[in-house]
Image (cartoon, rainbow, N blue to C red; front, side, top):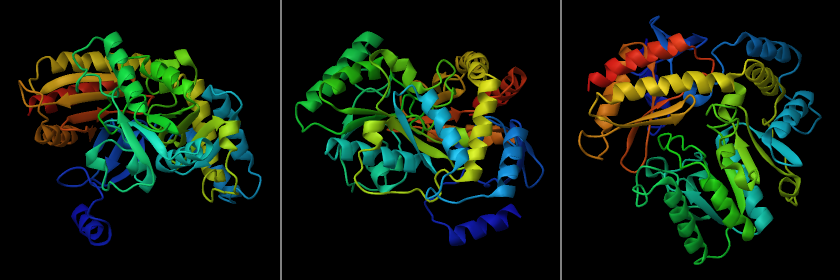
Length: 427
């Protein structure tokens, strides 16, 4: 049945639509941290639909909220008042840390970043954007134009002038040998030098932890130091929290809070986990920035009632059950467990991450060269052992991406680590 579905998939969907596994997997249902395929095989899910199933599969509180809202009305558009949208916007604005915040809902992280770019360029009257090397911000025309990851950038054409700066990757590149303080100083000097050669850009967009790039991050405080330079010149800071938001990193509710010394970002984008699988994205910005557009707009499906009901129920569950604290505790245990395994596997160059956002970088033993075949082998072996993980990396890197639902238990973390250990030893 799966082979038949795969043939049908190939016949009607684009060749560039990525699929995992030599024998692609069809997931039929899930519960908690587990999913099942068409053959009845059960898997521990350590990737959560690319970090979208943030809380748990089939979470009763979310399922109930969606069903009840669907029984009343599913959708009406932003042309009408929408109570669930207003209620979720109020909560997001309060949690954002941005003063006088306004919230605009979209259907995805790509669309959220696209909107943030529109706001920044309109507000600043500039189409120049600063972005980080190794970054990923989505698949739209403008988002691809600011993505610093060749594997996910199918065209160099763009409506924007993009200028890339150093800093998103701590352990590779020309500053990798420096200590954290000197690393930050070198990246700030690079930023200042770049700004001396161009007209003032509209904004810097940055992921606090680079998702598709392999869960890489700078030392804490880098973006605070950048913010001081940007603020002097009126340049905005956009924090792409599509993967880092809602407490996944454990230590903070938002990834930008590891860089908070110079205040909050001007704009925050979010998506993925807030809907626990439902299509929710959005932008939070100061009112003067959000309200700068001089033409009307709407969002046909952004903020639709059924997705807002899911977001409200999911956010309430996450806060009431302190899933941020659970990500910190269980994620810390999982990282240490994987580091002890990695010390015995020559292919593992580094285990890095925060909370339940963990990257395992694989290289050819004794070198810094990427080992994509090894990553594919581990992906397949982990699946055979009953574990689903993701892949990522950029600029000749190969990384396993581990991001389970944030309700992961200690027992499940140990189980997943044991399966991954066997998969790593199989390389």
